[in-house]
Image (cartoon, rainbow, N blue to C red):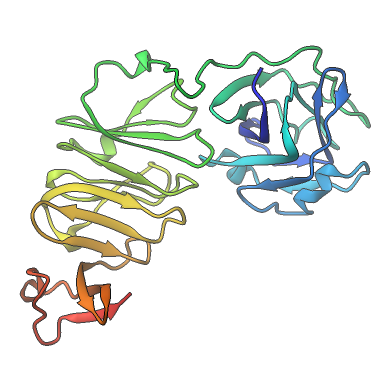
Length: 305
């Protein structure tokens, strides 16, 4: 049975409805386990997420599109590491109810369903611990359902529910349920020696392709757009910041392509000596402004930092 200081509820299923809850109560060994704080990856439409820890009728409403978005989670934190068998919930309606979710503690996860709504009451208490997948540190679980796939890069969302894998001479793969099922991202095209970067909420996904384009999605992999501003090239690697705003693509034996506004604008970035250290300097897309980094032609330099 895993122990953790912070437990996550992710892959929440409301069958397409808003999620409205008035209480969320961690439970283990026949008793409540009281947390010290609660947070959500996206803000509620109405009420406060803190309402879920109060024993009253104050409710918290999350939009259906937010609950269904990749990476959505509710995180419950305790004063120290604890066991949690499951959660009891209360809400005003069986329509806007949590029907299933994945319970995550560290690297262990359990798929929980059949949560029964009871008018004016908490859902029934779990009678035993959930069954957790054995994916603890130091052990491996093969993704047999990914098939034979020559992979070169992998990225995982903060809540560990969304996983993107870049391959070679193939479409990349995406899982939105922690690796249980996979889809081929044919909309990203056939990529070569592809690496991948992902924002914490999994909405921004960037693939590199050697001899092709940087391929960017801003909607969790639904569509991809070739970043033609930096051209097709020998892209060796790429990365994305947690907030999805800073994007980098590394070209073989050359420069970094850099965007600090989520891909809306790109520049070439080099580390150059400035004062007593090194600093980023971004350049325009004019070919005269391309490397070597130690030279900057007139009108090339955009910003430093």
